[in-house]
Amino acid sequence: MITRKTQGIERIMILSAVLTMLLAGCSHISPDVRTNGMMERLFLGRQYGEGRLVSDSAWQVFVAEVVVPTLHGGLTVYHADGQWKPEVGDVIKEPTFVVEWIHQQSDDVVRPIIQRIIDQYKHRFVQQEVLWISMPVRINKGEPSSD
Image (cartoon, rainbow, N blue to C red; front, side):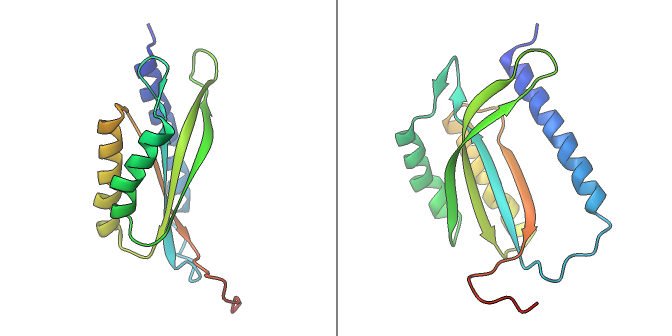
């Protein structure tokens, strides 16, 4: 019997495999000299239990108590409509919060910072997983490009 928990684990395994393949294909490429920062993107599902949702007010408290004090500098938070298709069954849709943070810190510094947010979200809202994507970006604060 496939449960919602099993489907969630399968979803993370599939996403992890796809991301690993994509990133492995790029591992031989030299870093772009124009890349001067990193972006961390967290996808935090709102559903938990049987049809319950993390409320907007509970989310705002989490952002104020955990996210903002943890991520130095600016960040962006928005609502998204996530969905995924398990191997068996229909498409599952889930409202999602997304947090984006652009920084110029080392991976050794960033990993525990992001992991702290993930762990607290999972604990506070009884979540099994949070998707975390990390990618190089070019930071431009409105100055004209030199290339």
